[in-house]
Image (cartoon, rainbow, N blue to C red; front, side, top):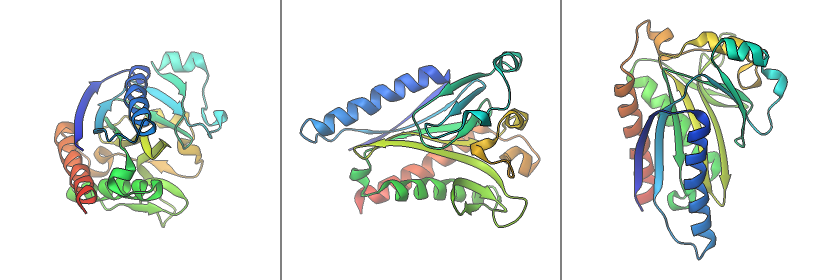
Length: 225
């Protein structure tokens, strides 16, 4: 089956969640109804300022109240992905791969490892050295030091091996918005962006194109292997 790439542009989180859910539910129903194979999707977008809390997250990791959220033009949603609290905003690539992992012979842990690796490889294209942090999903810089900082968060939901939600890569992101949460539940680690590490603003379309190619190449390899 095909993997279809879509870019939804800048879209409110609630609308993107609804559109994701429609695709996800249809794929799950098709699997339950005789195991019909359906197309897979790789969706990129950006969201206006929003904080989202995973199903196992701690609400206290949001450090401000509703009035302050209004002041900074941000919204807050509890959602059904894994992980704790994170921020989405302008200058960030949010990726929603809606995939039937069985079509790619991947388990959930392997899939998350694959997404992390695609981000790590993309960062290498720009001369940014990244890796993993034991016990924490996502992509990190200086993960084995006291200066560990996350450049990409990952939070996924899966049912019947079909995925939704995904990742958020900080490209030209305004990092001050992370000051109002304990990102992903951590109180002793920070966040960063490509712009902060490279000290210049990036062409986000170019980054999207390169990232799309990394992910599609890896998925194609797994689908054909």
